[in-house]
Length: 542
Image 1 (cartoon, rainbow, N blue to C red):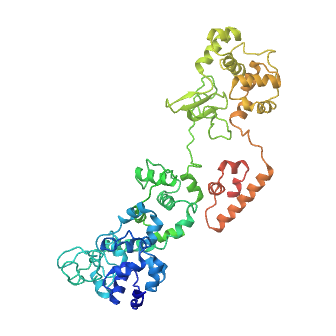
Image 2: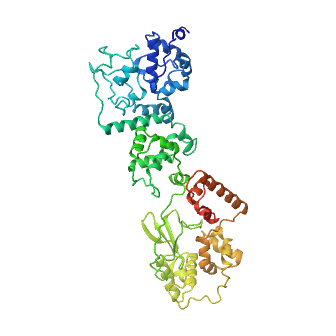
Image 3: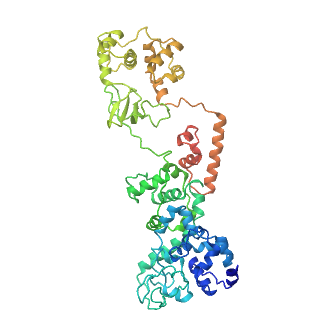
């Protein structure tokens, strides 16, 4: 209590003054000679020794070493005002945790006290931002920031061996603000330093903004910042490619994407963040009004990444559209849910005239037929033209019977080699083409297994193996299986709810003055654009 009674003179905090500087000035005015006298009242942990080696921590993260409320009572200044005279708001916001504080410490001069001679002469106080390594000029006097005594050239420590003398050199005891100063004349250096000052001042203002406006509240702050930096540096309609980006290097893009996609717990150095904004000529204060579209975030998270549809020409020599792409359809991006062998092929196309599928084999790096082998088709057709029976063809080629019937069904359906004996006569009953898709909808669970397909077709409809594959190759059935949406039964109640949600989102975007698009609406609702088109809701966004 005695120290509180003697702490009667409490000067005003100078704008931008560091907390350690204010403590020294206040102690000097109250005739306190050692920092340890103050320390005993407000220290937080016994592990910290009272010496000059840790005095810088008052400016870096005071909440870790002292009880700020006790210090607030001692100085008669609100705790939330005191903390703004340290780097604590920036440190706790950008780099929580011990490792993060070490990263932030690289941006700050911790060993030596830096000063402007003119400012020190005028108000006897040290500015907090003088300790930032990239700040070299006093924004008020345009003079260079010093850390050495002009007389003996000694670097000045944060604290003189526990003593609170702060205006004299720790080595020769001369006043630090004596000597002649030259102002910086280079306009480019001045402008650069002014920008750096603005950046660091605004860092104290944006700590509450980013948390509320990018991604979800619970997401790590560096994930949110990475989203902002990618959004600012990526032009509209440019795909984010880690190997080629108009602004970032491949390693930088990779690191940013890893952080955004939660594949890395890494942090971004404050220097990198600030330099990026400077190169983009964007003020930190501009982040206060920045809105990142949900559609952009969704692309970053790889939810609906736009993929280039690659369509190859038809490779069936007997097809009327051989060598063209006129009837080729990309199967992976059609409405259908079922794409055969999707794990093996990066792209899959089908000709809607001959219904032969081709896929790009990722392992072999080439296009190949996926459902019909031309060489096997020609072998079977050659024996078929010689009037070999199905049993003889199976014995001759020594292959699985269902596979032979699979190809014979195709030959009977399309007659690719203009055989004169391709008529089925009375072996297959002609069914209405409108009934065939309905029949195959009942066989949906067995499309992938030919043996189960023929067995179930026999149980349900009495079809033999040849009839099953003949119907299977019918164009309407192929269209239904591979290209049509055959798994969805529209629920009118859900559809109406979706319409109401779309209306709500459109009104929200309109009020927020955000461009209304199918992509943005789909991203906010967390659905695909194709879902909107399926329900004809994309017309609302035009």
